[in-house]
Image (cartoon, rainbow, N blue to C red):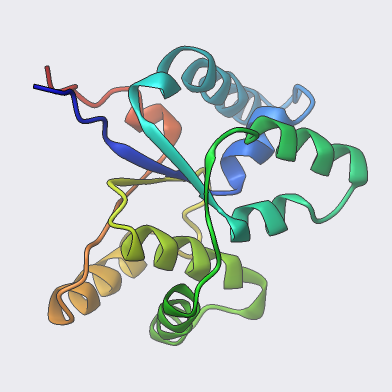
Amino acid sequence: MPVIKPSVYIETTVPSVGSARTSTDIIIAGKQATTKLFWEHERHKFDLYVSQYVIDECALGDAEAAKRRLAFIGGITVIPKSDAIEDLALVYRQLLQLPDSAKYDSYHLAAGVNLKIDYLLSWNFRHLGTRSNEKIRAYNERHNLWTPFLIAPDLLLTLPRRK
């Protein structure tokens, strides 16, 4: 029987943290170390996905940093933009009252829902945190939609694995 790997959508903060120059801030440095540990030793245990929205977001800002972020996610399966993702993202933006600055969060969530991804991996839960997650789950249950498990890399490393 073939082994089915859990699917993981890599949200933009993961390549941002994983490809950044080492921080002197102990919290950020810990996130960087955890991201690199996951990337070097654990990612092969998952089917990884990014979307074109992640690529677009990674390309923003400083050119050298953008180059590092894009290289970090090179070779990962890319989910293309679609009307279904755009439409659902708009629903989530309204439901969660996300500011324009957080529009990509709604795209990441919608892509994960649309493709029934197991985990949405992120270091940023400012807009998709506990309160938002409750609203997302309630909405998705009412509309018979899949809900990915939103998780940080450090917690994903601690999950038990199916044999």
